[in-house]
Image (cartoon, rainbow, N blue to C red; front, side, top):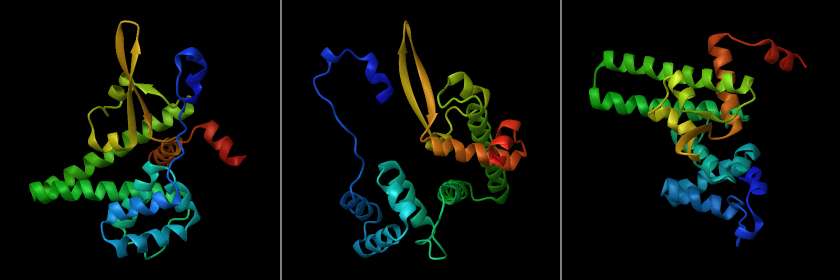
Length: 210
């Protein structure tokens, strides 16, 4: 990471690499691989090119995947493309939850199980929101296993979609460090927490009013 460069002895470095993300051609190639049908991939790519926000996001490979997921789930967004990051994240979250729920129903096939699964997913989303909000208020983007255990999010398939885990070597032991895949993802879940829980701190209120 750039912030760690100053701690690395220059004499031990024999190569520097710059991660540039996708080019426009590589975005098109990714769409071809994702949708697997040339005409459909071209149609989806043209929709993204027409939406400046979505095209800008697609230069980052992880976000390119998110955009493709949204397009696939919403049949190309024929009723209107997302215009903000909140629109994009909301549609992506809904798509993930819908896919997860359908998979569970296909396996268990009962309405009672479907209802309990829906409640469980809601709880996970609320926990992600609470974690994101608390850490954002503490001006933190990194957190640890104890934080995950506190909100009971360890080994959760849905939460792992939005969280990255890195193992850090400390003197005598290895510790897992977590973060949201992007600061904007953390901000989205923090805002979701405020919306669903009705909890807005004075700091947030002051920021909104200013």
